[in-house]
Length: 352
Ligand SMILES: [Mg+2]
Image 1: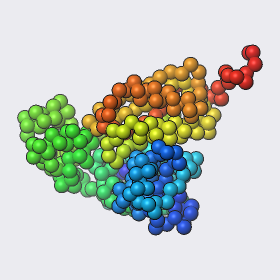
Image 2 (image 1 turned 60 degrees about the horizontal axis):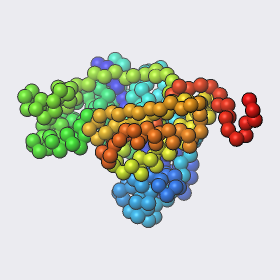
Image 3 (image 1 turned 60 degrees about the vertical axis):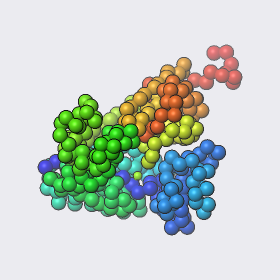
């Protein structure tokens, strides 16, 4: 049997800050920028009972939790830690699909279930030893179950779902946990009395098709724990991106704009560090219906300036015409990369 592991560092940015300043331990903590429109990037577990979580506007987080300690993000540091973690993911020579700075699928390959759990446990141990950070892991025959497993055992957990147990593991969970089910579809399913993944898995073809249309069979397969999508490793860095999946749907444009500003800064820093500039700026939006929407724009010249990238991203956001539609994920991506700093064409350049 082939196994996949999903790894996700617990409260990544917050955990790095707590590791580096033990006086923060045990306190409700948010990593967030300092602008008026800042959003929480990561919250410590102590802050979460107050409803403080990623993508919540900082002012709202402070209202809910007046004792909240706010630490500014240090992306350069998180990226350095991320590189260390990915080196450990890669140390066994297994294919890796990175999902974000602190999250990846690892294709464990053909082995027994016990062995697969042992390998995942060893990788968690290696990361803890090297970085003092806890990473939760899920092990299963497919990617979706592995990811749901690691989400369910956070923080500092390891959960393996044995082959043949996928459907019964998923059955009691709400349908919203299934990849592809947004709030609208969830409401439609619930109105028809389908509340859990198990309810969905048990549906016959005809009622399923009338509810979900053309993708009904694919969704039912996932609900039954059948998921054969491979781990996609070896993506080249022909583009640089930053994206954020929200823990709930975001409709507020100001919140999306605030996040794009952070992402533009993050992408610009990465360009500078790799001595690159980009001429294409694009955004990716996943609606709550899981429809993916992309818009991109070409600049007149390559740049690594965060403000120019941000302005181009805002242009893309307006062209997406969301009109308050709920958004599940927002990403900013730059491409058409060239090496070096762009030639300055501006005030200080004299006749060339
Ligand atoms: Mg994480």
